[in-house]
Each structure stands twice: as C-alpha cells, then as structure tokens.
Image 1 (cartoon, rainbow, N blue to C red):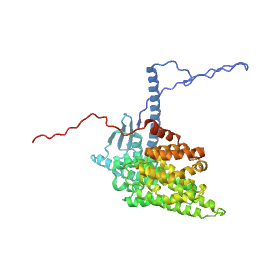
Image 2 (image 1 turned 90 degrees about the horizontal axis):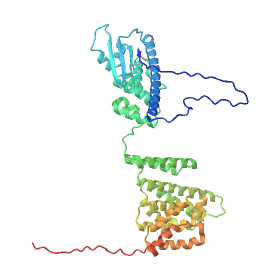
Image 3 (image 1 turned 120 degrees about the vertical axis):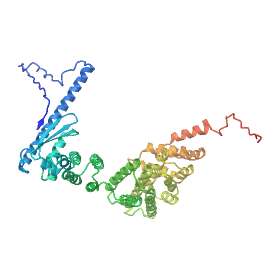
Image 4 (image 1 turned 90 degrees about the vertical axis):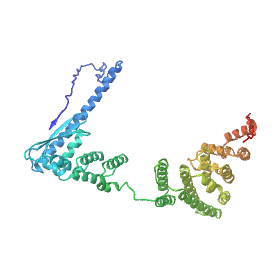
Length: 492
C-alpha cells in the first residue's frame, strides 16, 4: 500500500503567567488568532487567508480519508489470510483519483476473477502462472469507495457488511460494483436499498442512479415502493373519493382537522405540478358538495322543529357547524383547483337552504354564512371568474344572511378575519353594474346606521360607488375618432 500525504505544519505557543495582587485587576486573557483585533487588511491578504483556510480543510478531509482507507486495507489483509487462506497478492491494483491521489494494494487474481466479470476479462488475457499483474484504475470519483468495494469482494457476508451504512454510501458502492460488474456487490446493495427507509432526497438519488445504471430486472424489488401499477383516472378518482369521504365523516374532530390540513396541502402541491397525470376530479368534488348541502338542509329542517327545551340542542348545533365546515373545506379545494366557478351558481341557487337559514336562530346557522364570505373573498381577489348575473344572484340569495350572522361569525371563531371579509364583500359588490351597486350599498347604508359594528363595514366600497355615481359620471363613450370611411365601386 502506498498512501501519499502532504506534511502539515504545526505551531506551538507558550503562555507566560504572572502573579498579581488581589486588589489589582487580573490581566486580560491572552489574545488568540480568533480574538486578536484584525487591522485593515488588503484584498490580497483576505484572499490569502481564505485560501489558507480552504487548504487546511482539504488537508484535514484528506487525512480522514486516508485513515479510513488504511482501515479498509487492514481489513483486506485480515480477510485474505483468515477467510481465503491466501498470502501475498499476485495483482498490484492502483486506484487514482481525479486530483492525482493514488492508493495501491496487493490483491489476488483468483478473487478478482471470481467476483468481477470486468476483472475476469482483463486478467484472462495473461494466463501464465506466477506472473504478476499490474492494474491501474484512473480518474476515480471516490478512491475510498473503490477500495471498500474491493474489500467487499473478500467478504463472505456482504449483506451483514452493509448493515449500519447510510443510503448515500451504499449508492456509491452500487455504482462502483456495477462499473466492475461485481454481481454479488450489486445484489447486496439492492437488497439493502429495498430494506431500508429513504428520505425524500435519498429517494431522488436512488431513482436517478437506478435509471442511469439500467440494471433492469434486478432493481424491480427496489422500485416497487415508488412505481405505481398501471392506473386510470377512474381508479385514482375512486381513491380520492374514499379519502375525502373518510375525512368528511370522521368521528374524531382533532383527527378530522389534522387530515383536512394534510389533504389540502397535498392537493395544493398537485395543483402546482403540471406533470401530474392524476388529480381529484371536478365531478368528485361537486358530488361531495351536493352531499354536504343535502345534510345541511336536513339539519336545518330538524332545527326548525326542535323545542328549545330539548337537551340535544347542542348536538344539532355541532352537526350543523360540522357540515358547514366540511363544505368550506371543499370550497377551499375548489378555489385552489380553479374549479369554483360552478359552485357560485350552485350556492346562489340554494333558495330552500336560504329560506330555512332565515327561520332558525343565529346560533345554529352562523357557520353557513362563512361560505358566502369565502366566495366573496375569492371573487374579490379574482380567484373566481363568473358572469355578473351569477355574482348578483349570489348576493341576492345570501347577503342578508351574511349581514345578520356577521356579529356571531366574529365572536364565535377567532379564525374569522373581519377586514378580509369586508374587503372581499366590497370588491364583489363593485364588480356589479352601477345600478346594482346602488341598490345594495344604499340598503347597507341604512342597516349600518342602525347596527354599527354588528354589520360589515364596507365604507370603502360605498366611497367608490359614490365617486362613480356623482363625481366621475361616465356616460356613453363618444367616438372621438375623425376617421371617415368611404365606400366606392371601382369599374371592372
């Protein structure tokens, strides 16, 4: 073995201690390199110091590598005599890194030829007995990995030898094993990768390397955890339907909230992945929306018939809040997926639900009005694009309910953002025709004077409408063009 290393310089410092009286102040601590004030340095001096630090780090890394390589070579020597009963080697194998670092070792033709099809082919060209061979492998990415791979050839239990290694190390061993056609090493590395968990970064490296190596059938077991079976959009949609339905019907509220957050995040990631082949379908989401709407109608109908003295009033209130929360979650997904346009019309058409809503106490119903607020916020931000008639129909059906429930919405839930709702509602109103704006905002004006903070404060929208109606007063835009078009017939 020949290990080359650069000499390193060491410096020693001596410290002189001095006695001092108890009344005097102790001397300041001796200044080290890190505490000594640095005078103004030139750019050349700063670059020189940085280069020196980098050189020291490289030298330290090389020393550690050489220590590990020496350990591998000691193991090789032990396995050669104990496991194989061999003495001096008949092949001088030298591994050279890209930066010129060389490691040489005496190995055995018999072992290399049995374990590696690459070495078997190269060494078979000289069949004379007693003749030594010299093999050099140049421009290696990692000399340490090559040396360790050679040591693995002498091991009788490769799988045991890899226990405790990290995924990145085994991937490096796999790459070298594939390069020298060390089949036992390849299989052991693949068995390791199939058995251990991967982080997301490691998963990308595993898939990248396996695709690069093209090991075909031998890597099938490893890839089974990431490669899905041939699927269709119908089968995938069935899975999404089961997952979403399970969340909506969950018994444990805490688990339901956690799974809603998780599913929403995962679906949001899919919406930004334009290469994703499968996603939750619009039909599935609207099917679940209709199911929630039917549940709300049943709950509100039951609330109308309920005697205020009944003990299960709280249970019904919780059920209404739960269904309303479920619908809010589905609407959030629709908005993220840019599929919420049809829901605006669907919600505006819920005349029966709105009628039931108006006839039960506010404490039962206020969560439902958050859906209207949710849609207004999305429309006000431009995240939902629907015709003016649909926007006006939405407000015609649900705006009075939103006004009446606003006080309860604010006080019952800390998650309600008053300013956000007011901004969204005001922006939605301002997208309507000027006449429709006037009807809605004059109605709000009189209500707000009587209710104050119990109503949403949309003064900003009122100001914009006022300026449009009384100050700017845009009329029909006249044609200011002086272009004249003359039609004449040319003789043929």
